[in-house]
Length: 257
Ligand SMILES: Nc1ncnc2c1ncn2[C@@H]1O[C@H](COP(=O)(O)OP(=O)(O)O)[C@@H](O)[C@H]1O
Ligand SMILES: [Mg+2]
Image 1 (cartoon, rainbow, N blue to C red):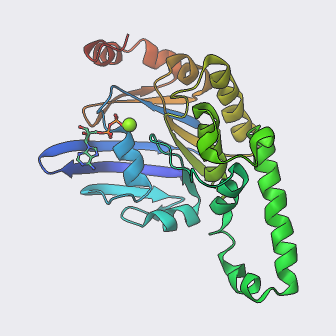
Image 2: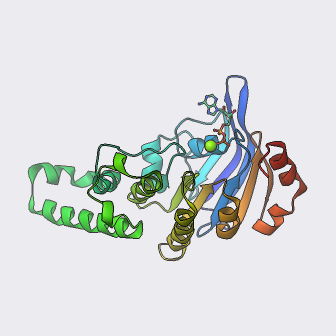
Image 3: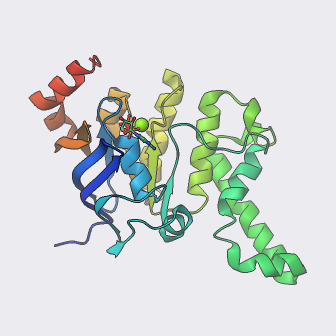
C-alpha cells in the first residue's frame, strides 16, 4: 500500500450534544487536488480545524506523511508541512500585503532569530533570501500592484489572495483552502482556478479544498468527497459524484441546486 500524504481515519468530533464530524475517513495522495463539498453545517470546516489542530478530535486519527498529527497544536502542524486558509479570512488588516507574506515566513526562519537580533553577517543574507521568497509569492498571487497597501484597504478577492500567499509562505506540502472563491467575482474565480492548477503542476503542492462553486470544483478536482451531517456520503471523480443520487438529494435538501 502506498503511504498517503494525509490519512484521516474514523474522525469524530462532538460539541456538547452536537456531532459535527462522524466516522469520517478519507485520504489525500501526494499531487492530488481533492475537494470536500456538502451543505452548510456538514462539518467541512470542522474537519479542517481537526486536521490543523485548532481543536482536538474526540475520536479517530489523522496521519500526515505517516506521522500521527491528531491533537497537535496548529503551529506544529504548520511546521510539519500543512498550510491553510480560513473561511473567515485571517490576515493582518493593519499590515501591508508584503508584511502579511513575510509574517507567514517567520516560523520557518525561527533558527535565525538570534542571528537577526545580533545583526550578524548571516542576517543580511537571510533577509535577502526572505525578500526574494516574498517577491516570488507576491508575483505568483498577482499582488505586485498592491504590495505596499494595507491589507484592510484591499477588495475582498485580493484579501483572499493575500491569505493564500501567507499560507504558502511556510512552504507547505499540503495546502488546505476553506472556501477560497467566496466573495470572488467570476474573473477572480477563473484566476483562482489557474492558480490552483499551477500550485499543483509547477510547485508540487497537494491541495484539499472546501468550496461551494460547483463549476470550479468540477474543473479542478481529481477527486471529490461529499459530506452531509458530519458524515461522508459519497466520494469519487467529478463525473461520478455529479451522478450520485445521494449527492443530489443532500444538495436538494439544502436548497443548493
Ligand atoms: N466550535 C464549535 N462549537 C460548537 N458547534 C460548532 C463549532 N464549530 C462547528 N460547530 C457546529 O458543527 C456543525 C458543522 O459546522 P462546520 O464544520 O462549520 O460546517 P461547514 O463548514 O460544513 O458548513 C454545525 O452544526 C456547527 O454549528
Ligand atoms: Mg465551513
